[in-house]
Length: 400
Ligand code: PMT
Image (tube, rainbow, N blue to C red; front, top):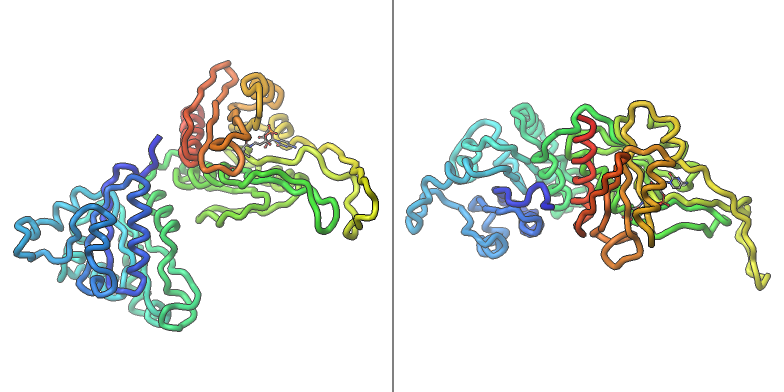
C-alpha cells in the first residue's frame, strides 16, 4: 500500500528567504514518500541554497531560468511542468512571490509557471513578522485564498532576523501533511469520525500510575487519514508524545474513566468510531492522596475493573459504524472474532502485538480485519498510515 503522494509529480517552488534551507528537508521528505519532485527556484533562492543541493536531493535538474541557452527546452519548461504536476508547494513563499502570484505577474520562471498551474497549490509564506502582517501582504494572501489556494499559517516564535512573532516556515512534516491532505480523495466529506488513541494512565498515587506501551501512533494515523479524506475528526487521546495533528479536534484524557466520558459525549453525532486506544482494563481501587513511602517489603494494590467503553458503544450505537481493535499475543483469530461478536462491532482490527515491527510503539503494523459475516482479511506488514487508510477504505465501502 502506497502513500497518497507516492508516484505523484510535485513541483517545489523555492524563493529567496532564509527558510530556503528547510525546503531541502521538505524535498527529502517528499521523495522519501515516493513523490517525483521537480524544483523551480528564483534567482534569489540560489543565494541561500544552491541548485546543486536540490538537484542532488530530487535527482532532477532544477529550473531557475526560462531563457537558459544551454537548455533547448527551457522556454517551454513552465508549461510542461505545470501540465504534469499533481501538486505544487511554494516554500518559502516570499512577499514578492506572494504579490506576483496574487496579481498574475509573470516575470521569472516560478511566477510564470504558477500562472499555468491548474492543480492544487500550497503557499507557505515565510518572512519577517512586520512584513508578514503588513496590509499589502495580508491582502495578497487573502486574494490567493480566494483563488482557491491553500495558504499555510507561518509558525510563530523568534525569527532569524531576531523579531518575535509569526513568519517562520512551518515544519516540513506539517507542509507534507497539508499537501497530502489536499491531494487525498474526500470520501469522508460530511462525516464525523471519532477516534481514540494512546494508553490510559491509572493513578496509584500522585507520582505513579499503571499504563501500557501504546504510543498513540496507530490511532493518530487513523485520525490523520480520516482528516485527509475530508472527515470532521475528534481524537480522544491518552497521554502521548505525538504532535497534535492539524485540523483535528483533540480531547486529551488520562484515565479510562475520563476517556469513557469524552467518548460518550462525542458519540451521538459520530458516523464512524474507531477505538484504537489501549484502555487500562483495571484501575487502583483507591488512589493514595500522597506518595506511597517504600517502607514495606511488599505492597499489594487492590484493582477494580474499568468499564469496557467499546462494549458500551456496541450497546448504545444507533447508526454509528463501530470499529474495534484487538491487541493479542496469541490466538488472534479466535480472540478477535469473540470480541467482534460480544461487543457488537461492524469490524475489528486484529493486531498481533509484541513483535519488533508490529503492535505497540512501532511505525509499522501487521493486522487482520475481521467482519461480522465471518470474512477475514489479513494485511501484509505496512506503515501504520497505510493500515489506517485501508481500514477507512473498508469503512467507506461499507458505509456506502
Ligand atoms: O499506539 P501504538 O503504539 O501505535 O499501538 C497500537 C495498538 C497496539 C495500541 C493498537 O493497534 C491496538 O491494538 N489497540 C487496541 C489495544 C487494546 O486495548 O486491545 P484489547 O484487545 O485489550 O481491547 C479490545 C478493544 O476494546 C479495543 O478497541 C479497546 O480500545 C477497547 N477497550 C478495552 C478495554 C476497555 N476498558 N475499554 C475499551 O474500549
